[in-house]
Image 1 (cartoon, helix red, strand yellow):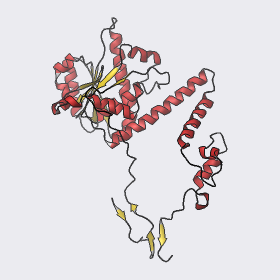
Image 2 (spheres, one colour):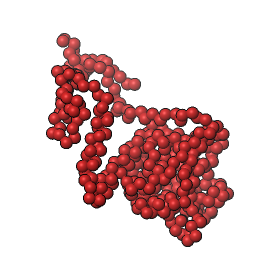
Image 3 (cartoon, one colour):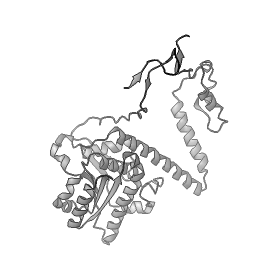
Image 4 (tube, rainbow, N blue to C red):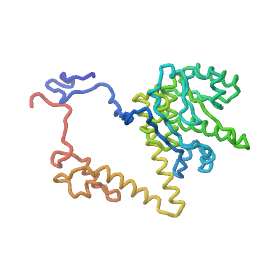
Length: 334
């Protein structure tokens, strides 16, 4: 850590009151707890979401009816603990995360027998926009096997959240198209998502797909993918991206809920305000009332009030018993 306590160049006799850091502050660490038990028989089961509050654009632009059509043949999805039987060579293979969604390295597309045996109908490559290798290998394999191929270009991790919707639209549109191409309903689409290693960028996209289509939170999605493909590696940056996406999904679902309630003739805006008020009340329920803060209602902050509580909370000052004054520099003469 680059810290300094030397005299400030501003003036003689003036020094910093505390250590300073020259770099930008680090984002908060997102802790993913270890799976409880870690037994050989440990598993996790999930089901696709048909919730009317599942934002349509986040689900690839599908309506609720199309979502039901997409998942009509999908049973409960179960992830089993693969760590007990995991071998190093398995990282070079692709594993099924869902019945219709596989995850693996780009080298997997060279195994044409695997693609045919598993019934893969679409290879989706998630590649670094500066690297063309995956695009060529994916297109070549798809042409030789006779299946569809597509890619998502990722210029940098900060842009990933904006690309999730595009990727899910490609996946869901393909699955619906394959199902509709067979009047008997026997043919089902299967998608293989790959990146260079199958452990980072592609794993992040697959985890986000679970969050969107199965309404999992960040921790549940990471756990589910890890159970199926033990070698995946979610960096702090990956987890921050998924946390941001989780917040966006929740916000979109709240907006959709409000709009539907308004269309049904109910007071959607009032319900959302009440919901936000309850959340804030729970979040502040652990605060202890301190002298000079007023009543307990002031502590929990009334959403429908005149916002005087907000001013009191952020005004600070020693006399209010809240934030203490802090001067970043001080004079040695004092």
